Image (cartoon, rainbow, N blue to C red; front, side, top):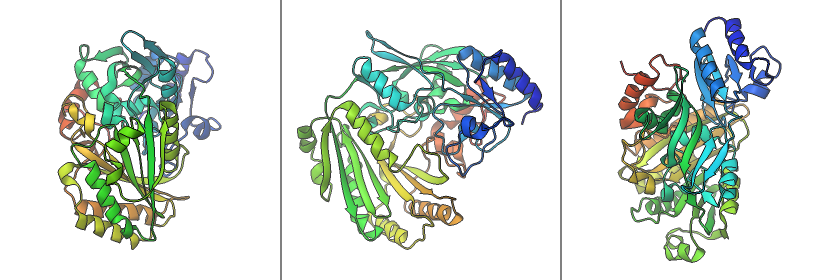
Length: 468
């Protein structure tokens, strides 16, 4: 991809017009450390340039430079793509647009709709919404994750069963498209583009700001954890079965978000209930979970977010490391039966993981997410009730560790007909990746791609291909 490095640099530097800190190139000192900053150190990336525009006009001009000189474009918000896709995903010829300067925020106190810059991190968004009238919305709890990518692939978090996904809160966006034009997109303006941006934005443009609907912060949040320390993973199988039975209950209280985390010492059930402790007890949920409660805390919204972020950091740190991950999404009827659960957990005991840093997360979903029709947005996992994600971390990452996850995934798929996974859990080695990420919406996405980006200006190794 691309031709004429110096011509590209001349074009980009012309946009900067003497401004410092606008762009950097591979020949510059500390380029990888200070500008590229890959998240997954197991995937080497070499973008042709990293640009930090100040406004939408800058982005439009950078896209024009890219198309003029034959380069692809990807935006980076927080930079937490498992495949480093905001940096090209290991492919040459990509220009990265770093949205770090897009931090704008405002609140309409009549509609309670917030305008949020696409470079904002979730931790900052939480604080800004709180300060603007005690407001909140649904998204994940990793504070360093950028809303630009997170809210456009789904944006799942512990409050999603209650309020829906982050992208279900988007009312309107400003986006720069492949022709270098600055557009507005909503249900009434460029509606086909708006449909695709909510689930697959990296394939269609660079979003610069979101207008989102918000909710009043819950006054009370109960946070809990159950820890089970066993010598063998097989001993956890019955505990997992009880948890899976709970989260697959169609009548499960939507205020409840939970994860089951398998790790080298046993398992942890952790989660959040948006209500009072009395309401949590009355829901019957504690009575359906085996084991001793290590902690039940009644917190306010900000404290609850901070606590969830702290728990998440134990497993999904914001620090760059070499890691590998596999995942899968399950409909209710695709969940693993008790025989399969026992078999999988027994198999896990027999394996050499190649690293002490491994963990497997089972995460409840559904609820309000399923209220939205499957074809209302490009997001295609509204009929799912659970995701699983597995991770190994190594310094360096060994073939044995990666093999453990591949084989664990094989054990899972042996017992289920589930197909597809969340686009936020990027797996560079996934076959039929677009079909797995976007499912029944993929063909419509290809048609939208043909209209808005027929030359594939916005590209990564697993991006949507335009319809023929």
